[in-house]
Image (cartoon, rainbow, N blue to C red; front, side):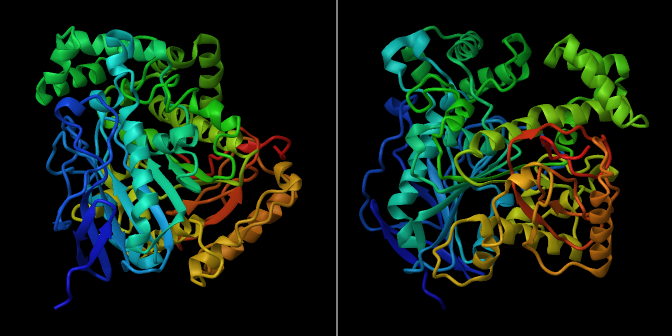
Length: 574
């Protein structure tokens, strides 16, 4: 019988468990429990413990309301507790290996989720790529992102508590990950949805500078931060819903009551006004985030940090089940919704463009494409553009469609998660993500690509390290839409795919690329492409390419069609 793995960190000794070639240390506290007098206060370093602490079970997830996620499996968070500042470490061996470290920040609109969710199990990723995977919890909702200083003064002057938790977890990783076989100087942060937005925010936070070397924001960028005025409106609405008017009552309020008021803010976000979409999110103008993250990134706050940013092809399709009236939408309804979001003049022009690009699509599909671009793709392009002056930046699009609801979800929000973590075999996952040899091949490509992006010491000689060397920076010719070199980072493609690629290249040489066109494709998986071209994948075999991203402008897309939706570089052929 194999002995349970043990490590000693700054706070004391830990005993984890080993399975399938990976040692897992679960439920490690990285800060003092934020309860009692520590509620609504910054995270404090964990006090030392005596003896050996068992680390074979997850810690409590941050308090949150339940949400029926429909088609999404593997999202159960397990036990909830206000004492929630825990992280989990998955490592091939707790030795002196100095492996790359990938730190996962979960999503969930800043009100849901945990590092313990089954879809984020780190065993497969750590085992396949010989890396250390860390998943973290952080405070959510009102307990993590409510700006109370304008209402209660200096006692609540420390804001952005959820963001501070993430920074505290990264500081813990830097101080302790070497004991788990990781390299504290080779840390990549990655996250999806609100986790991707957190990654983008950390890129703009001076307090997080130096804690990571690379970043992968998935379906989230650097655009989700309130200004102080919007944050004050959220706080006022929340306090009215909670029915409290003083600081003491707020600190002593039962968690159940805090969550009840929180869901009122979430469900009635339109009443807050000012275009607020997510009531609970980071606030700019506070010590950890002095200015909006995108502005800080543009000014060079994250200089030297390489970024790999992207989206899925049909992000908004996942959210249609929350809006049963969307499928009944007519052209007037599409225009009305677009007007609410971008104003009448811009809405009229954009609606016309989406209809012309896909004249056979229904208004609901036009709206889904519009929201995919507005909420996800345009912010990703903006982040890529802001960071590209300070470090190499790469873009991707994930186009594998979900079989759920008879394929109606397409390549929806979160569809890439089980492919990135290698959790396709989790219970119920096949109905959402698909299954079979093609899915398994694609998952391998995703894991290899994500870990190839993670920095490695030059002396390591594993396959993912050699693949990373082929990720070349863009040249002026590439930014102009000419001569953009490609390097494969996946296994050899099929002859059919090679013929298709040659045909597409020939068409490019004839400059016959339509401004809003898209190539037909069967169930292709990930597409990692330059801003200058659309995807060339036509094979069922998994494959991907990686390109540097430079100075984009948004490219229109055909709703419901499979094709690259990454932007076209200025000056590229139309």
